[in-house]
Image 1 (tube, rainbow, N blue to C red):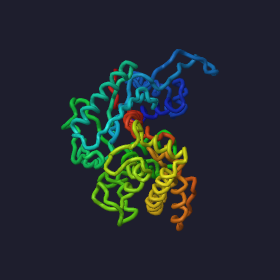
Image 2 (image 1 turned 120 degrees about the vertical axis):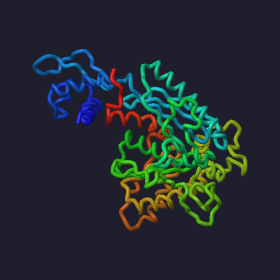
Image 3 (image 1 turned 180 degrees about the vertical axis):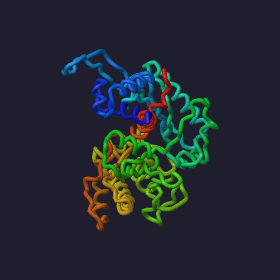
Amino acid sequence: MRRRNLALVLGAAAEHSPLSRADVAGRVGLTRAAVSSLVDELIGRGALTEAAATASGRVGRPGRALTVSDHGPAGLGLEIGVTHLGACVADLRGEPRVWRRVDQANAGRPAGQVLAEAAALAAEAQAEAEALGLRVEGRVLAVPGVVPNGPAGLVERAPNLGWCGVRLADHWPDPETVPEPENEADLGALAELWNAEPAETFVHVSAEAGIGAALVIEGRLFRGARGFAGELGHIPVHPDGPECVCGARGCLEQYAGQEAVLRAAGLVQPGAGGPAQPGAGDAVALLAERAAAGHAPTLAALDRAGRALGLALTSAVQLVDPDGLVLGGAYAELADWLLPSVRAELAARVTVRPWDPEALRPSGLGRRGPLLGAALTTVRRIMADPTLLPVG
């Protein structure tokens, strides 16, 4: 009961601050004495701060304003992408206070080497956070792969990295700071849920090197019986199509994945393994630049990708009946050119139920979603159970 009441008080302060103790009592329906005890504990755990007394306009002594602390407890999010590493530290208000991204090629490299570099970046981000008065209370790592519900710390498969059966604890340099892995598409969907407030039941689709999806049902992430839900990129859209890295043929990634779109646009030569343009750097930015300039091959490649994506999403709409579809990751930044063809496919194929074309929209978080979701996972856990925080 006390755990629940602590969460109620902390939640009220987070949503409505600044509040006095009396204001909090009125909002949560507890006595002032009970709220005062809970507030004292939350201050002791570093979750709340109390400012100097201020006049409230009511008869009696001025109240002291309570706010969620922007110092103290924080969540550290990490991300390993095919072409980058990232780190983010978010405070209890959900504000990113540290943000780092390092562009580097990770595909095909030994998992231990990549994880060691991620650990070094994590240590740098944590040191920067500590200089700001923040204390990391949890670490979550976003990976472009399958993270099963069972064994803790296992990445069962990350085909675009070339990983299979990687246990983080076997490679992380410091056993005290091993992060909890989570699928990057799932974390992107959670960040969307916690920040953008979309419909309660929605499908979130994200892309960079690969394509992932996550299903949020009535405000909760659906992971599947074993944690394998969301492999939209490996749904066949053309069964006789090219072979995929997963071993099947005609998967969505072969038409709407980043490398497939770059190749179709003539920006990557077969076997080149990267943007053909000297100094191109960010492949997504390159595609957006070419599309905005009216580059016909790029526009055709994005139209083809949108139609393939529309085919796959038709199945999701018919099966799940979501309130909305959210395009995240690279898709959000290419939405101006993808949305028309995706909507055209949905309009033509979703015929047995009502469907609003505006229910398909780009995420406002773009490629920031998975890393932000990783950092916010710890924050949300603390907000739901403040007893996770040490006293004093």
